[in-house]
Length: 547
Image (cartoon, rainbow, N blue to C red; front, top):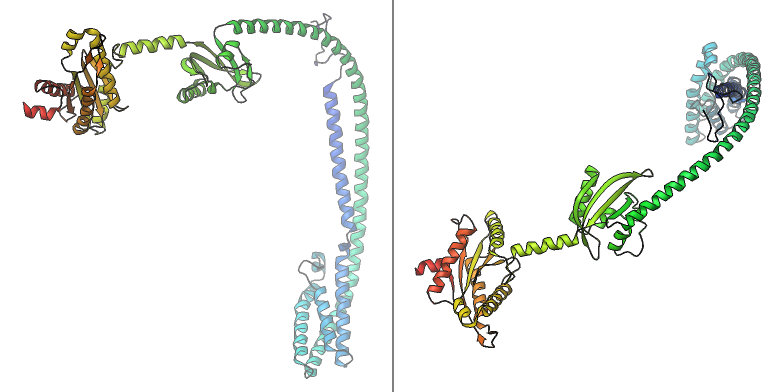
């Protein structure tokens, strides 16, 4: 096996490392050992510091301090009670001292309290201390009440003082013994704590020694690995130089390929763009598409759905890309200001770790224009510009069905130019064409945008008026007839040309199964209008009545 420079690479050993190379497993185990020793040192140090902290706390002498304080305060209360009995002190002083004793006995959590060890060793004394608190509270309350009543209760005050002296003297004797016992307990505990602390310092010293040894081994290993790494780095630098030459050559070939591809795409008649989905960043857009969008320079960002001019087409494009990840041969208008038709295809691909749209299309504006022209030729009458017979029947059928389905009225007008053969025979077919165009224009001006108008053939026209009754359709028909009767045209020879029209009206009824029977009724009304004098509007119902 050779390196990029052509030199053979070092042979690997069975363990996967070449001779003289760092051994990652040994380093790992050294690091694990040092980390373990460090954790052990931290745990031992925390253990020792915690014990030192406990020994340094003042509450280590809690029982001794508490019992001594209660003893001293109780002795003061007893002495002050004797002075009150001898009238050497005031009841107020005794009451205040009782409050001090009460606060010393407070075991609510703010002050000291008797430990479990003392309660187990001297349960009688612990019980006495627990019972003393309510007793002190009772004495304080009684004295406060007597003091509030005035100086006439000296006897009652003396009785309370005597009760205090009697009970406190008995308790003081027991507390003196407790102080000595608690002092002995404290001395034993301090000696035991010093012994534990000495043992923990010994363990800490051992762990620190192990940590120092592991650190020394790790430092030696790291120094050796650093030397091996420098040697490997020099070899890697040489290999990288050779690799850079190969990469530069490959990059140059890729750039040449990209330049060729860009040239091909820019000279292609197709539209091509590659843009990211989320950010819209344009990776490539060829010149034909840039020109079709009316841009002077390629845009930096472009979202493909924004290329589509029609919102409905844009929605269909987005749904197809989200569902299938591709679109094939979708005909759409692209561009905002001067849209043009294009056949678009797109794919969802990944570029530089980001989803992107690749779109290509072909200009089909000429094809769509021809298609529109052919459609017009297939549906429009060449002379009048109105719908021809086939197109009128197709669209009127749909409009008739819509009105019947929604319960809306509709009416049909059948229109025919009076004596049209006479116009052709006297003035020529060119004048007849003028009459047909004038009639089509007059009818179109009188109708609404929603109405449908077509030329059925020769001089005969038909109009479908949705949402119109026979009466409202008759009004429209009369307006058309009057406009035609008042119109004055000139023939190609300059002769005046006047002509009239007759109109038959029929409204949709339940017996009309389609547009054809309705047109038949309107045609019958038209026939009757011509038979009774022409230049008139006649509804189907009236025509039936006249016949």
